[in-house]
Amino acid sequence: MEIVQKYTIGFHDVLRLFNTLPPSIEPTATGHISEQIEMIKQIIDNGYAYEVNGTVYFDVEKYVQKYDYTVLTNRKLEDLLNNTRELGGQDEKKGRLDFALWIKAKPEHIMRWPAPWSTGFPGWHIECSAMSNKYLGAQFDIHGGGMDLAATHHTNEIAQSEACNHTSPARYWMHTNMLTVNGARMSKSSGNGFLPQELFTGNHPLLERGYSPMAVRFFMLQAHYRSTLDFSNEALDAADKGFKRLMNAIALLNKITPSKATSGFNLEDIRKNCYTAMDDDFNSPILIAELFEVVRVINSIYDGKATINQKGLDELKAFMKDFVEDILGLSDDSNAGTDNMDELMNVIINIRNSAKQNKDFATSDRIREELSSIGIQLKDSKDGTLWNKI
Image 1 (tube, rainbow, N blue to C red):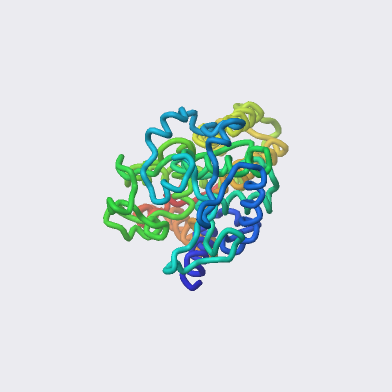
Image 2: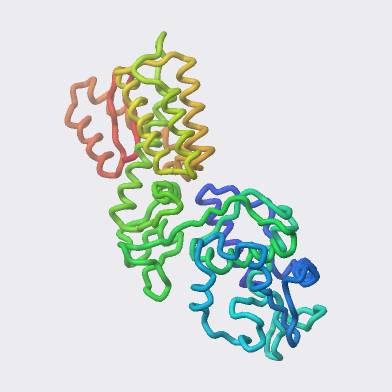
């Protein structure tokens, strides 16, 4: 239990750093043994499972007479049969594709529970079907997971649920693609995998530096969830710069003085394009491209090349909050732990302004250059001097 608690707490910590909403329910497989047993009973009663020597198997041959076993992968059943590995218990099963719903425990097996068929433990797939059925119902909207789970685990989840409830468990399946590092698949055996904290600190041989959690989140959103996500220092650097550009533009919204009229852009067209992107299978890369069009608009307004009235400015602020903060889950974490950063920068800017007024341009330029060397950019305008991190 200590190991479980350690990684559960670590998982929650990473969720918070990535600004990810926590799940409302976090069921555990071992806390729902009775539900799994009841579901297996129902599958047996419906004629889609059988018991051999205390182990219960799902009858795939019986199932395919009514349902499509390869609906997720569109593979031929004959190909699955030809590619099935020889595993333990094959001589007990009616068919090579049959899989265990309940397994009789060997004497040395630690985790075991009493069931009508034997003292044992659930198969790999039944836990997900039983828990989703309890908390989400016989059918729910979206089921997620890695693409590597589609062929076996999710295929068998569908089979179990249909055999029990006579309906497919999920209306839509969202499968994420693989992670790669410099073009090679990320794996523990290759030694090219890194943990979230290593991404944040840069404490890994393959990383040149660390990146903020929001910059990493932005990096991941730049790839469609069904596409391969390739980690590299160059890609992370580019994402970090792009994220800062986005945050700097949002910060400018509070420093824009509205005009009497709006000109130079059409927010409704941009809004429509953003919704179209998200309606297209959550196409976050296209959405981000549209948001950078808004960044261009904001900079144009601030530079006086376009104008916006108060109503339009309020709508633009609400629009950016909706898509950047609420949908993409991005927020400016550059000032985390530096609550007085604005006040400190105001002091520095005032000192620089005094130097300029006294025609001490050497000091003025030195302040700008020193700030730039530590990643802070000053931008002079007719409305004063602004600063942002670069």
